[in-house]
Image (cartoon, rainbow, N blue to C red; front, side, top):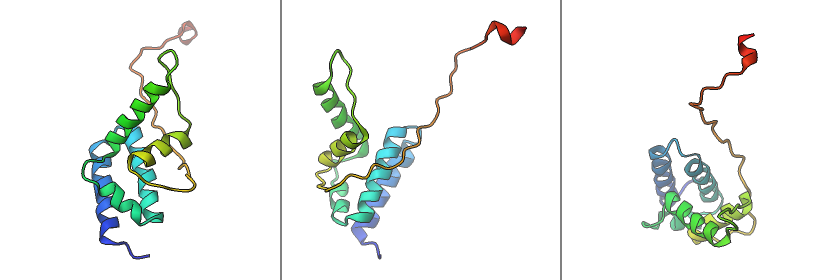
Length: 120
């Protein structure tokens, strides 16, 4: 399928934001999810191209929802709920959310961890 100019522009907008935030696994995951939506639904490109809407701001919207849902300062979303909030932020209506496989980068610990057995 030939990509429209809007799709190309939306891909570029997402790629730029993802490239600027390479160390942010959440921006990477949501960016990839939105790229998949553009590939499936041409109208998704228009929503993503809305100048004031960004992946980073979608995370802020998710954070606000988490604060509303929080119990004892803690809230959690399933992947479906999280991606549904992203779609709501971008005003995208999709019948079925297909959650992409996410790879969360391992954080390198700067903590010194030694056990007595290591010296014996």
